[in-house]
Amino acid sequence: MTRFYFHVYDDEITMDSEGESFSSASLARSHAIEAIRCMAAANVSAGHLTGSHRIEISEAGVEGVQTVRFDEAITIRP
Image (cartoon, rainbow, N blue to C red):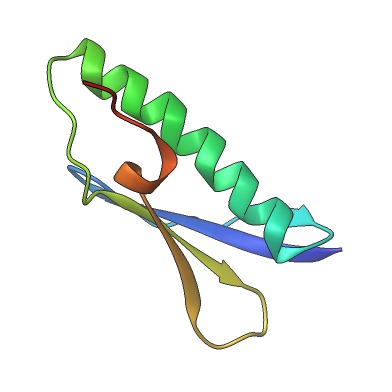
């Protein structure tokens, strides 16, 4: 299991100092997508949604990050 950290960049910046353990980067990304969907729902309920907001996923001991933007985690239909 690897520890992943989920740093949220929305109206505020929230750095994750605890992280969560997942067996793969793919599962960590899926977790971020689910978190974004919950945050997006709250934002829409408040009357707004900013697609460029994001979660950056860093992996313990590994350089670089994965980024998941809010507008990548949802589909907006006309």
